[in-house]
Image (cartoon, rainbow, N blue to C red):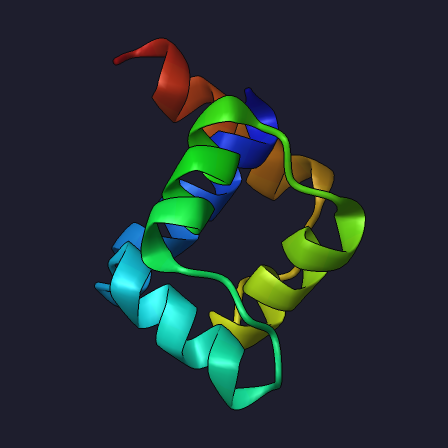
Length: 78
C-alpha cells in the first residue's frame, strides 16, 4: 500500500514513532491514539483528512511522482 509506505517512510526519516505522531497530531487538535494510528496505517483505512494532517505534522517532503516512485521501489525490495 502506497499510503502506508509513505507514512512509514516519513516517520522513519524523522525518527517518529506512533506515540510521537499521536502527540504531534494532538498539538493541532486531532485526537488519535498511537494504537488507533498504527491500526489505520497498517490497514490503510485512514481518510484523506488524516493523511494530510499526518503529513503536515511530520513536515513531510512534498508529494510528487518521484517521491512516490522512490517509496514504492523501496517497498518492493522488502
